[in-house]
Length: 275
Image 1: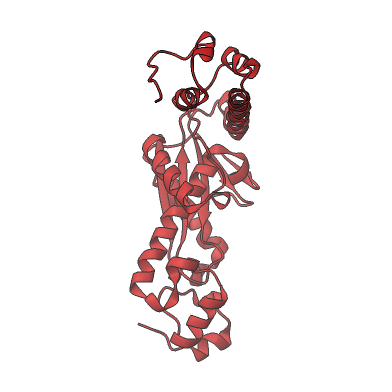
Image 2 (image 1 turned 30 degrees about the vertical axis):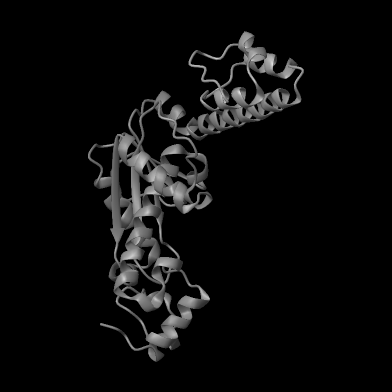
């Protein structure tokens, strides 16, 4: 039977506890301090030393993640030191798909916020993105979302439609940022100081946060479209040009959700538009 130990685990407690009891107790400790790790490592029992090794690895992971998150916040820290306290990161989702809008997001994060696992949305699983989406929505100083619709994409071209979505996201923020950081190569059409950062979603915290908001928002829109057009699998491929998507277009035609400027002319002529 495992005894419950309700006091803080201390190095001198180790010898009086079994390996199972130590395992249970260590599960409740977020970070094992160095003195306790040393005591565990010196114990004569192989199982206890294995616990020490396990928690050393855990501590190393925590330290690596903290260093990564600090690095992710470097650009914002440098710009705040230059006199820009409120910084909005901007990114978009849905530039390449054959269907659906392009969605942009602008996010202003608090200076001291560190969100575990925050990263470029493309590096995260759907479950991780959903969790971070809620965290960002709940803890950001401001979030703005902008869309460019299918008709605008076809009329303007995807680059200008993306810039339009950026503009709408930035202007949709409930506060006016002092600086805008944009992922990619093109500035936004807004009268604000800007920095354009290639691969910013992988190197800048606020842009990474924006990439998650944009991606989750757009994915949910595509799931809604899948309910309207169940034959196309929008909930699976999110509008991208997969083999299954092209086959659905060949069989069932083009929907109002499709970007006609993205489809070959021959395919448009052969497909019967759904409306």
